[in-house]
Image 1 (cartoon, rainbow, N blue to C red):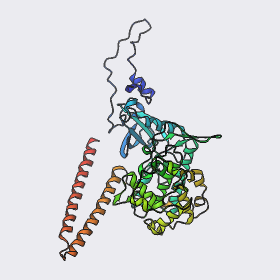
Image 2 (cartoon, helix red, strand yellow):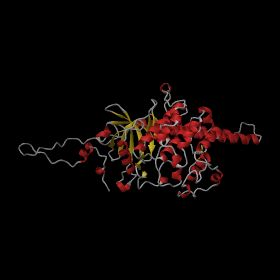
Image 3 (cartoon, one colour):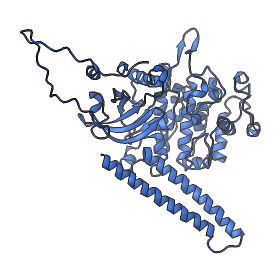
Image 4 (tube, rainbow, N blue to C red):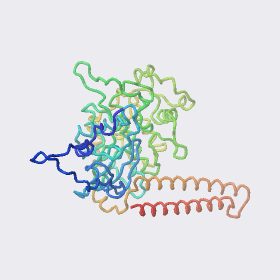
Length: 481
């Protein structure tokens, strides 16, 4: 097992600090100089006061606030005290991969990929430092919010031209990765960053891989040793071929995720803040079977004719339920657009249809991104050339004037989660109050519903308690600072 000082992320400065003491120096007469014993040791800065504590590269950063939490650590907003630049720092844990000395292999891959690519729509890495415990710090450009936080903010609205602008940038970044044989493998609204100036940045390459190549003679060639299909991509954005157990997956899985992101933005902008295949907001999908049912319910059910080789996939016969049996089957390749049209014109997507009035070109393009058979799915390059982006109005455009007047900040991190939790609790409360009111009316009780009143009073007490706890926590953090 590698020791802390064997970390490949050690900076030259850290290596100098970790080196053994030098032999006593001698003067020109060959006599040893007397060591200076009163020299105090270098202080270890507090990670909450003067920086993150660690190598000189890390000490110049002042932590401001936590803005996100991921599988491999936390993300902080910080300031470079030398240049005054605001940056984002991912503080990762070394506990994920004990086989490799506790250092996460996924983090090494992320650093390697970020160092190898430069694109306007991919987050840029500035440098790598480490804490006193040897935990790596990835310093990146800072963005104001994630796309997930943006679309969940009720005070910020997106026009249809801005939605097209965002998706075009995501597709541009995705195409750049695919040209270099890289699969992101976790595209989601949480992994797309956003600035009010109109910058869109794809981030979080923790499970990305250089995974395929294009050979003149053999065409698409997949890399060996790729992770199993059920171990990649967050479940709400996981492509149907992965759910079916296809081990020879390729760029299509990222394109499917982009389609999910586009549909999710439309639904969130009309109040249904849930992933596209997430199910009922009151009872969201949590199992693989539930997601397969939702996909076939919205997109239609493929057949061996519309998806050649479907019956040979490992999990083809695994998903059996009454809901899947009742789903309508595709009659021909390309029926996805027809099913999406029905969903938005007559189904749960009708509010989005009323607000944005999507055209046939939109349904064709989204159907191409969400084609059930990956062989027929659009590539990033094809999608960017689709008339939806190139010919149809409104054109993809960012309305900088609109965001310049947007005064409210987008809730981030803990604040965003707290607001979402409050919204969920309020929605449940209204539902419970409605049931209580119906019950009192049926019972002939006209005294304003005693049970409903008790529920409301209990909710108020819990809200006040949470508020007091939040005040204590804030005061405690200020005291520590």
